[in-house]
Length: 106
Image 1 (cartoon, rainbow, N blue to C red):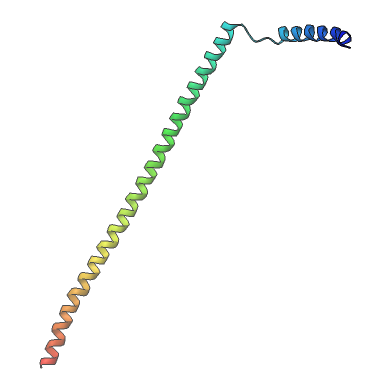
Image 2 (image 1 turned 90 degrees about the vertical axis):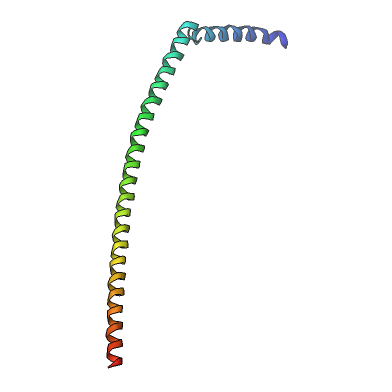
């Protein structure tokens, strides 16, 4: 039975060798050029994406600063309004206390 499979084995080797030659990779120099070209493309893509991310980050940081400044202004306005209200109430109470004391003493 082993003798009957020998021609198929030899034919398989021939077909495999033919397919290997047909689908063989490019020569070494050409392969190195392709690798270099793809590495350059990858490097350029990385640079381009890094620049885009820097621009986006700058925009986000600027927007964040605007929000912080706006919140700071609102907080300062609220604090100032609170101080004024406290001063108005404090000055009004001391005046009312004087009037109340004057009314009870007379």
